[in-house]
Image (tube, rainbow, N blue to C red; front, side):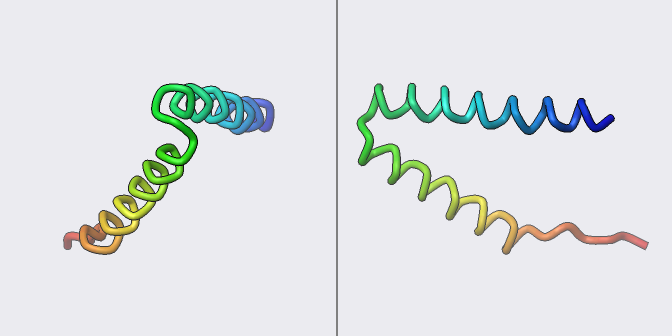
Length: 56
């Protein structure tokens, strides 16, 4: 189980680097930071305004 967790974490680091490098190559480094900030704010707003609700 620990090796599967390590595989998932390491895979995320590797794929994240490849994805962000490809995105930077396509749209430029400064636009990549703007895109990452927009995605972060979108995630913040989704988790803030659409919380998980418990149903009885």
